[in-house]
Image (cartoon, rainbow, N blue to C red; front, side, top):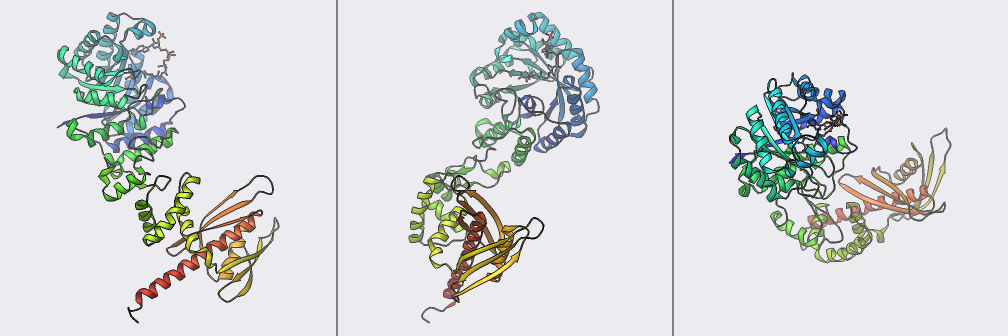
Amino acid sequence: MRTVQFFDTTLRDGEQSPGVNLSTGEKVEIALQLEKLGVHVIEAGFAASSPGDFQSVQAVGRAVKKPVVVTLARAVEKDIEAAWEALKDAEHPGIHIFLATSPIHRKYKLNMTKEQVLERAEYAVRLAKKNFPHVEFSTEDGGRTEKEFLAQVAERVIEAGADVLNIPDTVGYMTPEEYAGIFRYLKQHVPNIDRVRLSAHCHDDLGMAVANSLAAIEAGVEQVEGTINGIGERAGNAALEEIAMALKTRESYYQVQTDLELKEIAKTSRMVSKLTGMLVPGNKAVVGANAFAHEAGIHQDGMLKNRSTYEIMSPETVGQTASQLVMGKHSGRHAFRDKLTQMGYQLNDEQINQLFIRFKELTDRKKRIEDEDLISLVEEKWGESQEVLTFEAVHLSYSSQLLPTASIRIRDARDGQVKEEAACGNGSVDAIFKAVDRVVGESMELVDYKIHSVTHGTDALGEVYVRLRQGDVTVQGRGVSTDVLEASARAYVNAVNRVLLRRDSRQEQLKKELTPAGS
Ligand SMILES: CC(=O)SCCNC(=O)CCNC(=O)[C@H](O)C(C)(C)COP(=O)(O)OP(=O)(O)OC[C@H]1O[C@@H](n2cnc3c(N)ncnc32)[C@H](O)[C@@H]1OP(=O)(O)O
Ligand SMILES: CC(C)C(=O)C(=O)O
């Protein structure tokens, strides 16, 4: 099976995304991660473009040991000289020279004849070859170039010593069949075409960058160029992680392998997203948050029975966390039961059916159902009617210079007594929670505290959610009041009730299990 090499241009074409500007340190950080991912070539920038980019190219060249590090350069002496100056200390220095070849670019941008383009291309490659062991030449806007002329350019740069010949679809105009046809044509019409590694470089203007890259691979190219997360100029470049996973997942079809460390994909994607500020859409293939999430009941049921029903690759392969069955409007009973079991609730069919009705009602009101919503559903159904502690009153003493003190009054149904306690805290809410702990005689771990207003205006109802943990029991409590401190006290007492009930019902269950049958 033949191997296709990966040329990563996240740091050059990816950085051409409007609004992205990576510092030298950030480029080095990404480059080291790309090295771990196993790409063969890293395009670190455009050395002649600015002193900052020169410095970045130089730093990446020095930091990275295994991949070839290249810089982009126009077919002009000063760019080629700057490129060597930046990369002469690199372990594997390379240069990427480009010159547009299409009629539109020749006429309007370069103002050059075909003959001038041929001469300049050859001259630039010969010049670069004096220093660089690795010279790539790109026919910018190759996709819209006459095939016969492309073949002439190819012949000249091969003669001049180019190691890699890239035919970019600079403006993302090609269809897969057309693009593949260019490489087939060159293979048939250019003598010595075997002396260069053919490379594909696609843009996503019509959403075909990955499809075009794969078509080029089918036509025999040995290198693909692209970026992590598909970032880049305009609509971006071909997403390398998508090409890699297409080759891996459809290996028997493409009969091509890569040397990439696929498990590094998710980490690389997260790093690039964080440092460039380019967020990855949830539905992005391979690395999006939803790429391995299933919400529809029928899919979830299939997944529980066998993952291959709805997953063509596993998230672990690319270093993503395990597949998720997301609870929502479209979920079914199988997934619902599985989720509750995972959360520690062993419920019978009747209980599941009752809860499922409430769950579906909730999904009509709420977009995404979180674990805490499910906890509330269960607790609400089997918890609330047997309240142990009833909140009666709270009083706060607060001054800007002293610790706040809270006094709380709670009725305890276990002994029928009304209990009062006071406590100081780091803030008013903390004081209230500590006072409740004193009444109960135990302390709870506060895992989460959320507050939002239910209505508008200064008399708005404040709704407080708390999440408490004690041992392996986690519960949620809710309290509502026009006073947010009272809402906090109510929420905390509500949650403590649930801890006590859950503990009691577990003890009950244990007792039943330990009592011999018939006694
Ligand atoms: C498809 C691609 O992604 S190509 C890479 C695109 N990336 C970038 O352009 C980012 C970095 N670029 C830059 O920082 C600047 O454009 C620089 C420093 C390279 C050049 O800046 P300037 O000297 O001010 O020129 P400017 O960018 O305005 O114009 C480009 C010039 O290069 C010429 N040129 C464009 N491509 C090439 C080429 N491959 N070889 C030789 N000359 C070229 C243009 O014809 C134009 O020349 P002119 O001034 O004689 O008309
Ligand atoms: C410089 C070349 C390869 C390029 O980025 C393009 O044509 O899109």
